[in-house]
Length: 270
Length: 135
Image (cartoon, rainbow over all chains, first blue to last red; front, top):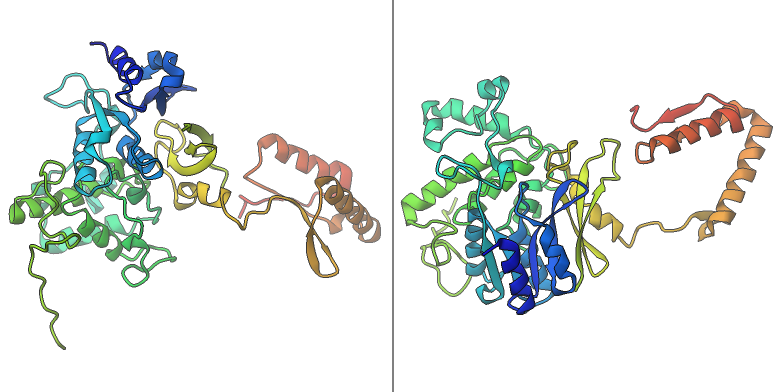
């Protein structure tokens, strides 16, 4: 069935109260709310090519209007993000309906609707001093530990602390963020505390990051964040056999909720 | 529920990054970078990311203030402009036009900046014009 016909049916039959998709407005593909009141607009529904964190928008609406039934365009990364949001009770799967659409272009898919996450080539200076954003995590092992450290520090010290990586992240939903906690990260000052700022975020992305690439896309300084969080989640996969976005349980090292599966290490006395 | 996405331009500096406002029932809920904007290509700085916070801030000044007897009081725009014009005239008459400087802004349009320098040169009669982006 045609995508637009399906969305119209969902709205007409009250399967969803609103549908979150994209519409071309002033030449830009912008996220748009389709509802029963403006059914004729559904003809203008498009799938891309830009990608916004629709699932994040959906969960912010669900917080304001509990019980609202939301439909949204779902790429593969959207599905993974939704899984994480369900696990952490930010959204209820009963209230969300996704319309599956094409993902980023890759070797497996000839046609993609989300061209904005295509890897952009890194420049020569960046390759010489820092890290190529398109590297596979194993490839970083060709550098010695000292070199790898200095390359990461080069990347981190560029940070202008815009908090864009956190703000755009579809699986960041905490009311109080560690990155704004004065005891954990130096707040209010520039440059960002290197590498603590990025390490705190990286630790929080363990078992959380669904590798959608929105953070790297939003980073004004081109820091290879996706590579960093991929590395963190490889460790999670190796150690706990947990894959964020695919596993149906909360991460094994979660300290929220009733059960703590990891023995906390006792603090060493000085 | 009415939820809209409104494309706009960041009002902080003169770069002109594209932003996307999230508006729920007439209230600004959040700001996102405009992914397809040619200037910022989906990136924003800290100030751009927080546009909704200063628009909704209680500290925001919504009307002009004039100081009477050491305390600021809200006045109408008409009154404020009359007051400023009178004071400027007094200063120019007493100390000469070069005692006045006009500082224009990156946050206003090109045309408004043009008008401001025209005002400085033609109305006041000074070349003391500077721009906040020329730091």
